[in-house]
Amino acid sequence: MAKLGAEVEMFGCVGEDSHGSMLLENLKQAGDDLKSALEYANVAAGLSTEKFGAQTGMPTAEEVARVMAECVHANVDFS
Image (cartoon, rainbow, N blue to C red; front, side):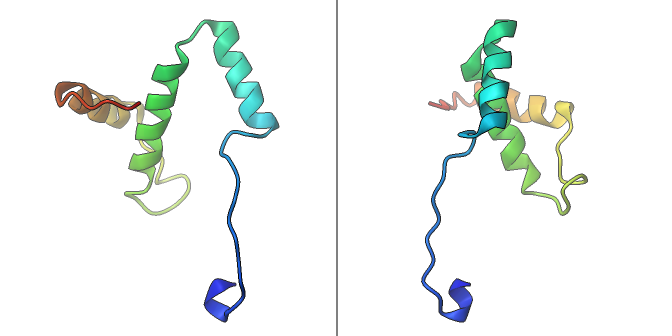
């Protein structure tokens, strides 16, 4: 719409919905480390932008693990 000259705004918070709340609760109940889960999700999301398509763009677990290992090796602080 902005390209057509309309004034637009974008707002929101990813995960601030019933699905995000459910996933967060499931993580807590499973005793998983939320910080690690968020780091994994961020790496996976970043990798998903490197390919075309919703399904074909999803990285494999091995791809995410490789990048996370590279980040640890490079002392990347996700916080």
